[in-house]
Image 1 (cartoon, rainbow, N blue to C red):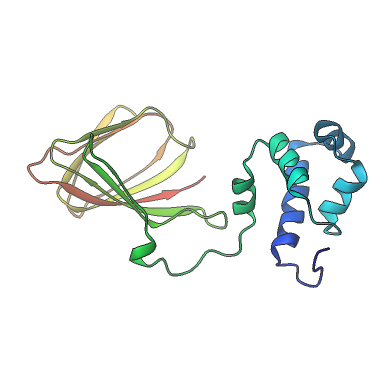
Image 2: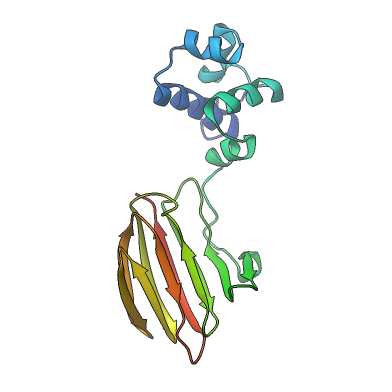
Length: 191
């Protein structure tokens, strides 16, 4: 049973999110029941916060909503932490392309923006076939070096101190002409 006294509890946020997902899909409780095999009354009680879902029921709901359980639970996390210490900033390196990515301010359900520190070795090339989210806003501020960024077929040479900003709707290409590596801050803002 849930703690209805605390509307900010994970259970309360989960109940609200489940109700919102059903509404976003335009489904009635009867339609959701048909799709999941979970009784209409159970679904109604879940959305009102009178009942906590079992793992099995939550799994059935995640399947019809096209989400992993981790993604659904991430959507109802509490407010993101205000401080992201350096030791908690995940770093990923693609040795083959010479690209390093540090998630300085990682994405969070409650936020629309994230900040990434990117470095490209001299001569490195990285291409992206499509925008991860069409219309995503990007601001790229070069901290050291020079990078050539191709967006919408136009090549922009962005030097130390310069900032390139755009809405990404298609492919993009990053190239570090050298002679030194480039280091830049990338702010990604979801539409």
